Picture (tube, rainbow, N blue to C red):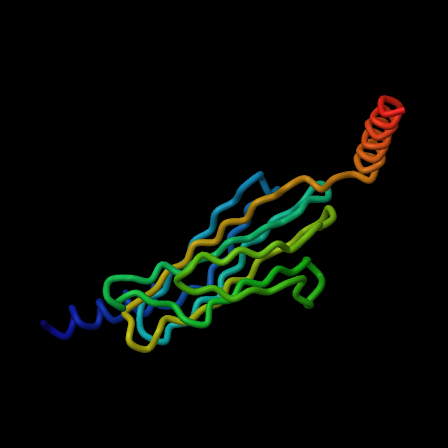
Length: 164
């Protein structure tokens, strides 16, 4: 291999080795998917996924490192954190590896948020990748609980009258 080819290959590898991307999902839909990768042993990943909520929603995230090829692809120290824009304190954090890990961040109000995904390619690996899935579930309104309680009370009253 001549020097030019080696130099071009090295530059290309260096330009895609580290992963530090920012993706804007806009208004969070029912489900959002994010992915990231890095090439080269000990290469860090530090990706941001921005989104906004228009109302109160329960936010659940699932992440998994896609390890395989007999250790050729392996991420370590995987971590997902959720932040509200303008607040540097994490609302929640969870670690992930080659098994799927789920975390419920609870009810979040309308506003702007972002996930930060951090990991490092294992020292003996050639690269690594991950998948982040974020889903929303509606949060029950207090009025729903009042209706539920009223309905259960009515059923109890009917059952009591029938016994009498």
